[in-house]
Length: 422
Image 1 (cartoon, one colour):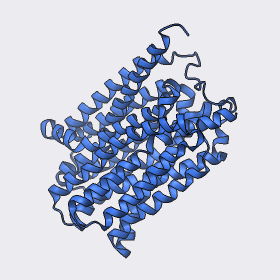
Image 2: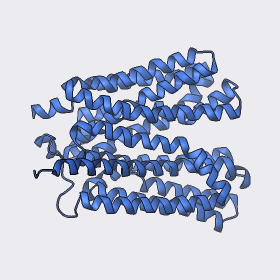
Image 3: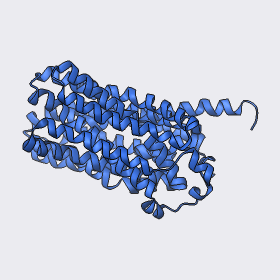
Image 4: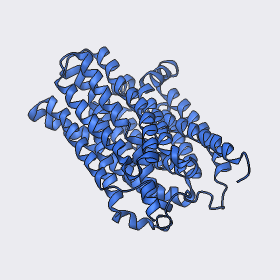
């Protein structure tokens, strides 16, 4: 390697990470923006019931989950550079189409059907997002910094969620809801074009440039995608990430309700309190990434103590929060629980890509499918259990699920020790 080439590569790697953070931030802001528009205008203005609006929200997530693995195939066939730019541009187009519906449709029933179709298709277009970001990190970032990089990228996604009510809510007030969607669609397309220009210099077309990183075992490099479904480590990782998804969506869907309707803290305070845990999680993700990289350098195969400790800690902290009585302490414990869980996030993506070898995008998509499948269970199971045994038990199920997910890591072997054995 020529003198000065390695520092230049390192600098460009972190520019890549920064752009991936922007892509994830904007994509998740777009994802949650539908709920903001629904709460502020659509439900009341067009007489769309909360149940019908919930179907619109679920349309995105359902299609996103069903087509996650084909999205992984797409990443491994065309590379994460083109896959992510395609994702951003198409997502931006369908985000703008969401707003265009408000200009061409006045009937609430017709608008509802249109939103189902547009948001469901947008979910399909978004499938390469996280697997593609993880694959890019695996190809370009130094092996000793990948967990941190993945933590930063996924932390940016949480910031997009946490800031959506403020950012998109202000856009609606200033531009109307159709104008807000069209503006955000244009911004997303612009981000996709910037990423495409940058990634084309990282992954030149036709040069097999998006080849597996040199630290992966040669046997893993030859792994065919079909064998991924028989990979015990990847299956355990997918189940474990399903537990993470359950825990996260428990907070995203039910914390505001729990604070407002169960603890009776008031709508304004509950909205404020519900926004704190995602912010703490956004901080926990890069911190856990740094810890994971440190453990991978120093502890060999025992580095998995980082994701295990994160998941066990989050389960314990959630349980403490359930038994707390002061609103301030409840919010504090719940926020620490979600933040501690975030410390395990980067480890999942690094491990998924390593286990996949040449099919790292597909393996990351399989893992993410598990996360979303677990996430879809939380909105259903939580109120059902709570209706029978009470809300403390319904929330507490998240602790049990998280402990089971942590146990899965005991059967996962990846990282430096695995590579050395190959």
